[in-house]
Length: 95
Image 1 (cartoon, rainbow, N blue to C red):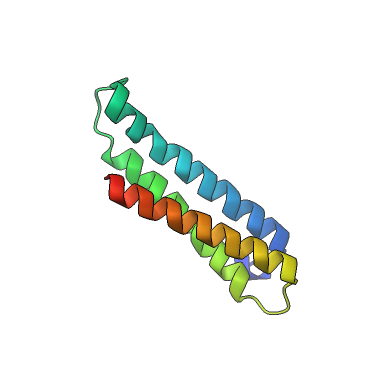
Image 2 (cartoon, rainbow, N blue to C red):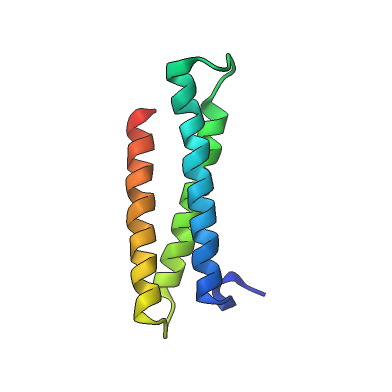
């Protein structure tokens, strides 16, 4: 089954999970930069977090572009796009 054929509520839940996981993973190198918990390279961890945020963003955009979607679900998708876009801009500025 293709992603576009799935239920929009399920897609928005997955978008939220991927986006929230990406934000949490991107916060790990940020905290490590200031508190020095681990002495390992944090670039790959930050890259994985940004990748997850992009994936969540793409799922939200896919929901927004679907036809015959309820107005409430489109509003949720717009909010998810806004939050993930701001988070991506923030983490790109911090790197």
